[in-house]
Image (cartoon, helix red, strand yellow):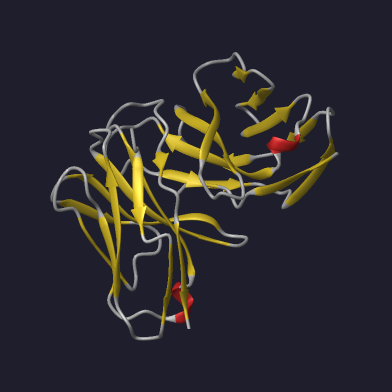
Length: 114
Length: 117
């Protein structure tokens, strides 16, 4: 049981480059999330997807796009990376509507933008 | 939006001793859920304990327990008999019980716990 997987684990980009962070879950969850974690800031929601084909902006969506192509996968794309996007990115999933359920997190991607 | 505050950026505890991590939150809702997550150096986020706001009884999970004060909007985590493996960043999180709209969790900024042998 893999849970939530993320690729890559580490990435270094130059300013202006683009890349896509991949996330997949095998728990048949409807809800999926992308967070960024910065020192002293906790986890901040970038985008949220309630189901396949639907996405919703979170607190810090600028500079990012997402795609929920199917129930399992939820990708995060940086079209033109900036140093301010240096962060650790977490993907998470959860059963929709299950009130006391926790989110299940992936192992994170450490991204550095030079 | 709801806010979650963890006022202790860093804490330390002697092995086998007890430590309490504080968390306060701001909400106008009456029904919600609170969580504590542990993030060890591996970066994996692990659920430690959860509490339903409508339950007066404080949640416990082995050595971990909470002190939930709804009127004060306080949700502290007590770790008893601290072990070296408890060293990690701990995050407090809030989730509304209202199921419409975005199913969002709000996280505090974290408390880094050091366990001293």
